[in-house]
Amino acid sequence: MSGKHDKHRSKYTLDRRYPGAFEGETVTRRRFMTVGGQSAGGIAAAAFLLPALGFAVGPIFKSTPHRWESVGPEDLFNPYNYVPVVLTLNPGIGEAGKTTAYVRRFNAAIDTDPYDRGAAYIAISSRCAHLGCPVRWVDAAERFICPCHGGVYDLLGRRVGGPPVRPLDRFYTRVSNGVVELGPRFSVNSELRRFSPRDPAEPLDGIGQYAYPSRPGAQKP
Amino acid sequence: MPKLPAPPIPSSLQAPPPRPGESGGKPTALDHAAEAGATVVDWVDERTSLSGGARWLMFRKVPKGTNWFYTLGSATMFAFLSQAVTGVFLAMYYRPDPAGGAYESIRHVTNEVFLGQFVRGMHKWGSSVMVILVFLHMGRTFFFGAYKYPRELNWVIGVVLLILTMLMSFSGYLLPFDQRAYWATIVGVNINGTGPLLGPYLSDFLRGGPEFGATTLSRFYAIHMLLVPGLLAALIGAHLYLVAKLGTTAPPWLKAEKSSELREADA
Image 1: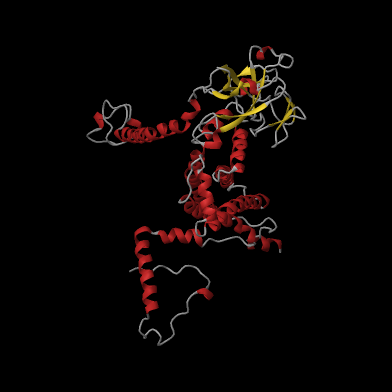
Image 2: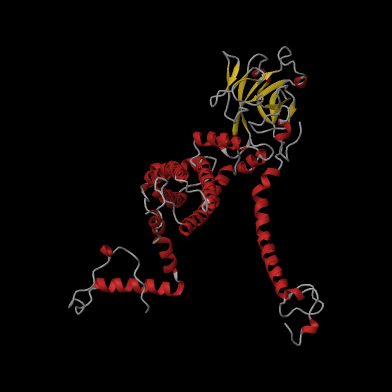
């Protein structure tokens, strides 16, 4: 490695013994081209991969607007038994966007929990807290019963049997011009403490409320 | 024009050499067709050298004792190819419309399209066949010890293929959009959500939102016919490459033969 360029060789790149490494260069041109070419490829790939990925995962972070839906006049409901009503959670997709809720008037003798105080109506979601099948209110047994895996809930929606991990979800209720309206969904733990809506199968007691975080776009009740 | 070397096929299958006097006859149309075919193959091979790779893949040495259990991998691949072909043609009729169009398009395929019931039936039952074959193939690999060194990576690729096959079954289950499809998907997505910390985000990703919504069906459709099949095809290629590269194992009930030197030493 001796030649007329030897006195121009850079001390930084001497050990690499590449031709074409000159005084003042901290990196050989070959290495510069390699790194430059790979960086350009990486940037070009990231330029389409990152937006496409964000596009696909975007709905996770989107917050959905609250909807209030009228379900019937006040005299349709009583404090002793549930009346099923049909709600539209997602408009525009027909039957697939609908769900059933069970509504009754507030009953001070049953609804002793402090969190329920002040609500004029109790609306229980029919979505089973096990894996999301639709539960049915069985009047004779005074139980909500799930057809899929045998979840059983009492009058307040608390689990009394089967695999569910928490009570049935509820909906906010309000009365407007004598008509009962159902609003956003919320979840409750076994003490009926309220949480922002969670998916089924996500426990909310003890460590469960931290292991299953709420959606980034969900508002706290 | 250079001639390809003859592939190592058994002599009983090779064409007999021309008898004396036979070569003098006029070439028939069949000879011309055979010559044209060979010319085309030669033309491609001269520019790609594909024949070497094809021979490397197809004419491998296999161990003594190779039996019908060794065909389960190929059977799985043909089940996949059948799913791919029937799926492409089903996609020509299918509409991922959750407001009723999806169910209607499946009903149309089943009841009105020529051979529609047959092609949809092949796709529907073929999916079960593929899952069963995947498990039989995995069982063969396990019980024959064919996952051991140096084939561990191929086992890992196989496990990924198994998971992708499950994902295909799961995403395809929603597409008919009847009651069973809808509720099975609700349950399946919620099972995904039971994973701590990341589970709720995974559910939201699959549904495209907090509830089963307008884009859930098209999401499942895209996963079912674009995302996963591409990954499956690529990984099946890698799986096959490693099989050809590493060769297959002898069945476990065959003892390794001693080399002739050791046999002499024993004597």
